[in-house]
Image 1 (tube, rainbow, N blue to C red):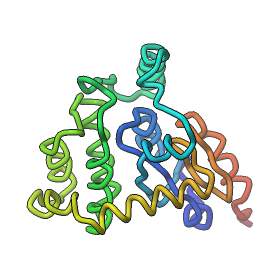
Image 2 (cartoon, rainbow, N blue to C red):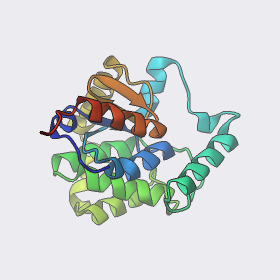
Image 3 (cartoon, one colour):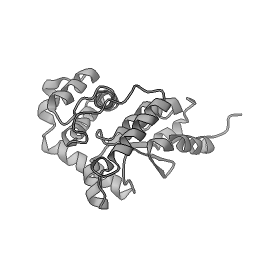
Length: 204
């Protein structure tokens, strides 16, 4: 499943928010499908406001949803889910840190490090020390990361990314945009892969 088509990959975007365990499930599995999209951080809270929705983690389906995440992690062969205490919390600064990492060419490794810390180790990414630790794992100097998170251009860039995603039809995360279509949910990667294969030029 790793014969990625470079044309399709160039058109692919992976929209994510670090607070979503389903993003963790999808991010860990992208390489299995040979998918190499552009990674795009967004603020899920802002998308909720724009769409009039709220997190299932704050509603009556919280326990069922958490059990579903744990079940999928087992089925996918991933490490057992370790929930951060008090999840979900405020992940705005963590998502802003993604924008900083992007500026330093470290967006994907930072995102993977942060997601693993959150959902395989139970780290609370609402705390700056956890964000900085993820930065160190990805090779991002905490002295660079810490003061940049609150910088106005970083805040503005995350807002712009989120607004642009909403305009394109993104309503939640993880969402993979591929070949002009949006695939919302970690369980949509198989379908997205079949679409990519259908569009790939046949080898002669």
